[in-house]
Image (tube, rainbow, N blue to C red; front, side, top):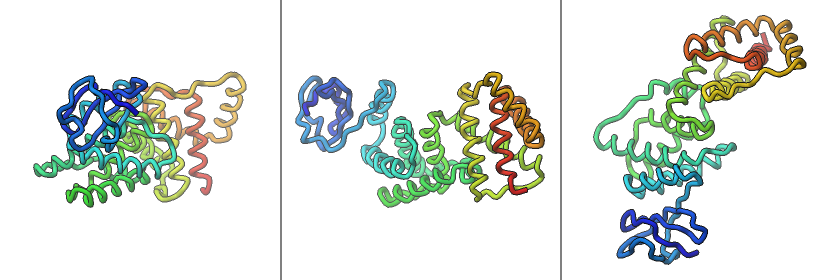
Length: 282
């Protein structure tokens, strides 16, 4: 494969164009030394290649690579390869950029004696257990590769980056989603006057439903109300699950008061069905 230099980032990193005119970031020891724009390079000297599908993401990658150590980039690529093996659903490609940036900054902050605590750490451990465990794994590998022992709370920040990539959200939206889950569960437990088993399958299913419900809500993609046939089904659910429908309405009231967003009848019915499910053993 022939590669033409678009920009020399430094002696070890180049922005190049392949034979199809696709932009790539390539790295290799001394790869950019004595080379100039528009020159062809020998691809046998390339050690690693990075490419984003989106033009904006490729630009962000180019900027990030110029700002962080190359070893942090390689470490992040290793971590993401592991995460992808553990997470079955597709991950937004922006995870590579956001996670590399976060890890590099966390390592820098550690050296400067600046460490942050995540106020949502407890909620993240509870609502995103798989992602939190991956965050802990990342801290272990970072410690082994760099000798830097990051604050254990960094696992929750890494978990949020992973969830962002799963849901195609940004970090501020992710905080809102987590807050909504926490608030909805508070309403539910108060309404039914009981604490749910956080380790149970039913609870995990309900949290997953709340996660995707919150994502639809904040991205203005809530389920639309159906036609006449769906109206018949909704009326049946409201009558046969009146107790759970009332709880769903309380969640809707909480969402309205907190974010000034309205739930569709279809979302209320889905909430009702899930509320009935987690109370099926009562």
